[in-house]
Image 1 (cartoon, rainbow, N blue to C red):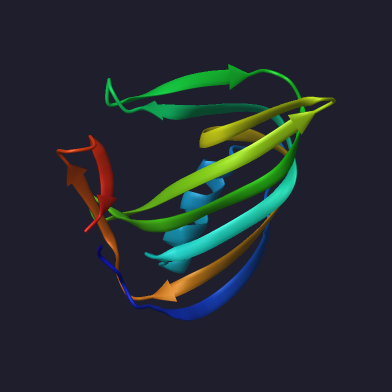
Image 2 (tube, rainbow, N blue to C red):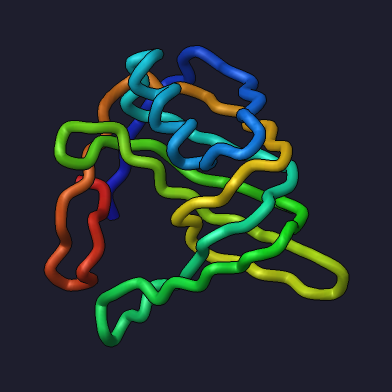
Length: 138
């Protein structure tokens, strides 16, 4: 097991812009505020989303586009450095009527989205892990 002891830094509440991508806006914010490591969570609604899961045997993500409005029931993730740049690793739970979709968030178009983001003091980087085929904390 590896662990990183970090302290909470600045705390932000973000209201993302209608019609723009969640990941795109988060990355812009991270660059603007010079944030390299963080924790985030959020709620809201999206107009469409692309989510997926990691196929462990093939060592690749399987993606699915959902081209309809949904509630963003839960968004949780972290920020660390990958290739020297802030990288968002985010998972979501989306819902509509009796349907629930969950998985890794590649992107989603915002209808309304509120994010709670806590900067963490310290640096955590990702590098390629041969065993899993993923970019994991190092």
